[in-house]
Length: 192
Image (cartoon, rainbow, N blue to C red; front, side):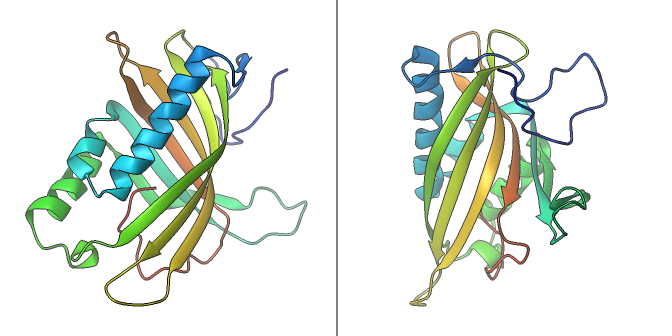
């Protein structure tokens, strides 16, 4: 069964629609490898190991988070296609990481304490045998400084995971669709 999961497909007809391949079942080894990769990625980010996370990225990564807007039911999608919270590539991500690690980025120093819960993972065979389309639900719980309040952010993620020739999984593409139209956090100085 083919599902259309990501409404803003590239106009290039040679690029298959997201989730257009065969859906993998949870009992299949590649599904388990992708799931383990997502769990490991969440753990690396929770430990604030940004250098380790950068090593998990494909150098062709596109990392986006469109702004969510409130619209009536039949008025189109609930997110913008031109306005983004994040619209990054490998170099811009590397620059942000370098800034966080090597300088005093006020938004990330001291670093926040965060926990990422990844659930509802579904995996499809992608355009080639080494690429997989993945959807997941994310719950981010974050606290900063000595504040007793926590920030909560929920989102759906559309990922492309590519396995390198040596079998290492790499994050190739991530689109984050937040469930909130107003992000209830003092900044977005975290990777989702």
